[in-house]
Image (cartoon, rainbow, N blue to C red; front, side):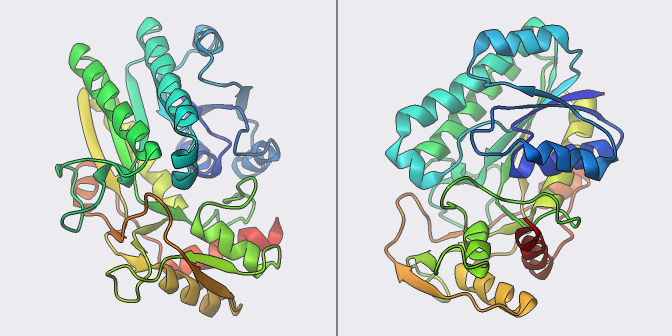
Length: 331
C-alpha cells in the first residue's frame, strides 16, 4: 500500500513514517515545513534505510493537492497536517479555521475524485472539552474550549458526513492524548519552531540552558498538586496506533473513533520530577497564570483501541522522559 502522510515531517508524522516503513508500507510525505524542518527527512531516511518520497506542499492549496493525487497512486491517507497550538489558536482563530478545515476539505475532495477510500485522521482529546467524568470514552459528549479544538471537532463532523454519504469510504478518527518522547535512535523528536507550546520540548530547552526556566501555567487546579493532569503517551506508541488504524481501514467501511492514550493521568510536576530523576538534571520552574483553553484533567479510556485495533501503549513515563532528553541533547 502507498500511503500519503500529510504533515509527515512533523513531530508525530516523522515517527509514523518510520513505523509505516517498518511494516512494509510505501510512504509519501507531504509537508510545508510550517512547524518542521527539512533535515528531518534525511533523519527519517537514515532510520528506515531508504529514501522516502517527499513533496513540499500546502494542503490548503487545492490545485497542488489535486496535482499530487493525480500523479501518485495513493491507496490511503493519514492526515496530520494542521496548526496545533491551543494558546495560539485563541489569538489567531481565523488562521486556524482556514488552515485546518480547508486542508481537510481539499484532501477529502481529492480522495473522492481519485477514488481513494481509506483515511486516518489526526484528531485530539481536546474535542471532549471540559470533562464531566473521567476517564474519557469515545461515546462521551463533545465540546471545545478553544479554536484549535473546534477545528478538530468540525473536521470530525465533516468526515462523518462524508462517510455517511459514501458507504465505501473508510475513516478512523484518532483522538490523541499528549504525545512526548522520541525515537530511540535520538535522530527524530519534538523540536518546534520558536518558544515551545508543549511541555516536554520546553523542559528539554531548559535542561539544555536555552531557556532559563519552565513556566508552569497554573497551580490552582483541583488536582493532587494543583497543576494540570494529562495522559502522556510515548510518540512511538502513538505512531504504532496509526499502523494499526491503517490495517483497520483496509478491512472496514464506515467511520470509527479511537482514543490513543495510556489511561493514566500525570501532572505537570510529575513530568518535571520524573525527567529530573531519570536524567539527573534539575529543572528550575516558576508558576505563572493559567493558559486560555486549558482544562484541569484529561486522560483516556483506551480500551476500545485495544479491543478493536489490537493496540496498547507499552512505554513508561520514564521511557518518555529518557528518550526526550536523548533526542534533545543530540540535536
